Image 1 (tube, helix red, strand yellow):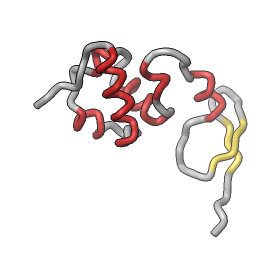
Image 2 (cartoon, rainbow, N blue to C red):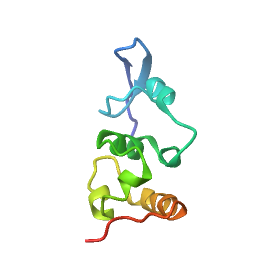
Image 3 (spheres, rainbow, N blue to C red):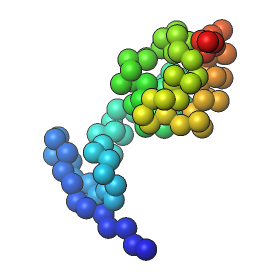
Length: 97
């Protein structure tokens, strides 16, 4: 089975090919990537999930349970070990019920 990619243009004028319905421009997304902090440990969908919830610090992340974080669109179970380790390193942990 062959997947067809369509040429798209984002609001900033970047042209790129995508085969999914995902509206995210990979060129814009690369420019948003951070090289420091716990968000840099995550893939783009997981990072955007936290950013969309305004979770930008470990202190903010510690106010949520693991279950609440997993329910965010774009957050997968593979991100939890990275988040747990980042929290633990700074003396935090996920909220418990």
